[in-house]
Length: 297
Image 1 (cartoon, rainbow, N blue to C red):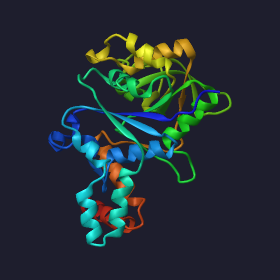
Image 2 (image 1 turned 90 degrees about the vertical axis):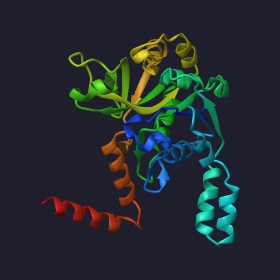
Image 3 (image 1 turned 180 degrees about the vertical axis):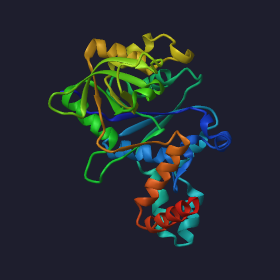
Image 4 (image 1 turned 30 degrees about the horizontal axis):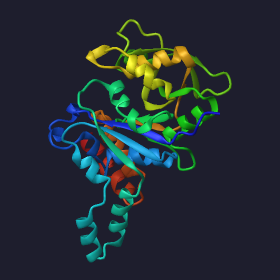
């Protein structure tokens, strides 16, 4: 039986150019979904799944990320003096989520390189990877998105990747997974090949890789051996393809709703879905949406 997954890597070194000018001074990971930074949703997803230690792979000028998950004495003191108990507890809860370590990615060498930066902290242990652009909303009685991949890894011992079916005309935007659906569980997928953003006209699958991974420690050596690939970067997909050939690799279609918060329309969708899920905002949000739709008629 494979060891339990206790570490998670969250790469946050990107420049967020799709959201300029907002991200000129504010990391894209700190853009709010209603009133909570996007990254906090990812961190909470990881800790809720049983992760015990998160490693953030950061770039320059992102110190506010560390500040957000740290204790804020001045703010807490002010809230306490003003008897704002609920706000005080909310702020303190963020700092108590769990251990978070930050590592600087000193050069923009791609996702594979970013993940490899976490090796000194994680060592010879399996680990999860969560990308901040992909948000997963699951029912309250179901495991979180990354939790479902962890369960599959601990049941099979094989690396797991979150997959989503997309139109063939869109697969060139993603890492693509070829293979077959499991005979007993249609949410599981046996991967035979991985291709990073296949060129148009070469599509062989509609299964896209979407932002969640659980990987065995063998992937460290494969990442070290991975040469620079597409875009002049070390591609995680290339190392995972090598892992598939050595140990096998599986995909999981997460039982939940995935939203691409790295896309402008997806970011708006994430905000609307979050607002509609809250009792204090649902009614007002529905009214606002109806008014806006009426204005278009």
